[in-house]
Image (cartoon, rainbow, N blue to C red):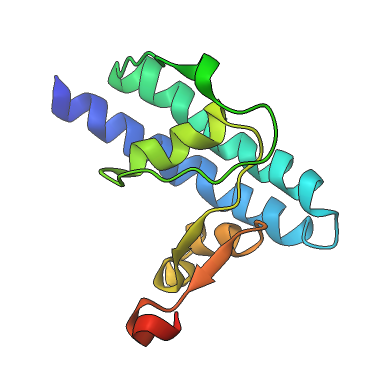
Length: 127
């Protein structure tokens, strides 16, 4: 059963990611907060699919401790899941991510339209 759920989830991603990439490219002239909301729908749909198709459940503990204003959030990056989850739980965020992710067809194109910071990890301390 886990294989079937995983397969269904990947089919779901395969279907929704290209249209959202097109939306991201077309939304590029819009203000950053509008782009973030439009493209962020992909994240919300993906989190929904993880819950419904895969059965992934989660609970957030300590959200009352988050600052109300702007802040820098440092996370121990352990999976792609928390990267998506942070976009749902936190106000609009700007991630620092490795530039190589921009090369992934569709996903990278949409990511490149988000108001985020791409760094070249191969550049060492200059990154």
